[in-house]
Image 1: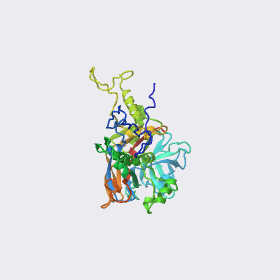
Image 2: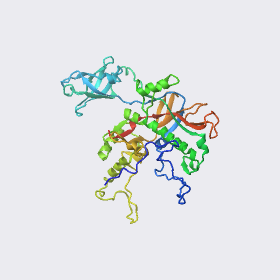
Image 3: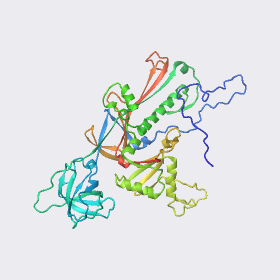
Image 4: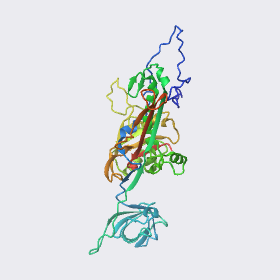
Amino acid sequence: MAVESVPGFSLQPSAQQVALSTNYLTNFDFLNQYLPDLKEEEFERYGNRSIASFLRMVSAEMPTNSDLIKWSEQGRLHVKYTGVTAATYAGTETTNTLTVPSGQANGKLAIRVGQTVMISDEAVASKSNKAIVTDVDLAANTFDVAYYEATQINYAADSTLTVFIYGSEFAKGTNGMQGSLEAQPDIYDNKPIIIKDHYKISGSDMAQIGWIEVETDQGPGYLWYLKSQSETRMRFEDYLETAMIEAVPAVDGSGASDYLQGTAAGAGVADKSGSEGLFYVVNDRGNVFGGGNPTTLDEFDAIIQRLDKQGSIEENAIFSNRQFGFDIDDMLAAQNSYGNGGTSYGLFDNDEQMALNLGFTGFRRGYDFYKTDWKYLNDPTMRGGLVGGAVNGILVPAGSTTVYDQVLGKNATRPFLHVRYRASETEDRKYKTWITGSAGGAATTDLDAMEVNFLSERALCTLGANNFFLFTNA
């Protein structure tokens, strides 16, 4: 048996009052003695329809007064080069010249004379040498080494090597270390995008009052002609979150870039269209688990080993769709030796009236992992209706990190995820709403209607993306 496709859902909900067959009440025959018993209160058949909750739980909001937000993140403290090649591979050398790929060195080798290095074959880890650096050629991206062993290991012809620095050694009575290393932070930026919405109702429709009890974002009320406005507001608040999650930068010369720059009132940094949303950033410079959900401890161990190589954040939250949550529950249940073919996992008191709990809220293996369902990934009108390369969940580190704020010019502690909105002493664009027209109490134009406008200008800053994990089917 399978879950049937009904009841369905409306893919295009009506935000305004229009007489459609799907939402228009036609039974107004008051000559009929058998009048229907009309229930005033709307039944919430989809429950709380809002999908905004993720950023409220894991992020903070703070103002910015610039078109561009810039920050720098610390690079690695230690240096390792991969894909290094040797001048000779015979295995009889006492010295050798090693070349670092230009893409890694860029004329700025972080290796100096007198430092001691570990040299290892990338294909066979047991083949390795220890050596001391005797000369460095920055222009050629090469350095000479003298081995501590009698001879070089017999590397296979054209092997690529991994080299990292582990210390230094100098003879008595020699000068100190020559040269110095400058910190090389990674600098990132993002720009706010302007998000808008609009609701309109004519003055005549406002005069035709037909009361019905509805559920608004401020509680129940009898404001029938503002119901669509309330839903517009709720939808706009959802978009404030989903835009931060799904936004992508527009490629130069793309249709979106040409359109947005062509309609811009002014020039400058703002002409850089689009923004870097959460999924884009994590997919670009974070970690991705593709090909389906991790369902075994071995797969989670691979994730944990990757986290070991990043920030090693102690506590992490997994926001998942329902299937991913089930997969984690089943994986944890399988660790119970009595769970095969039974339902004994978990802690129970053998009470005949107990409710069997078949789910887990988290687990610890190297780090603490807490899981929660993310409504956005389950909603069939949003990500929940996608297949193929769908996103099944995301792992978000808990806590905060320290970065250098390029605008403030000083170190600042920030949550890994935080929203920056445009604001100044005279203009706050975090969440603006205003009414125009000549109805509903407004008297700004001669338009016989009431118009409610919504606007926000914001960007999501994802700090330490290397500590995030995106789970996809791709």
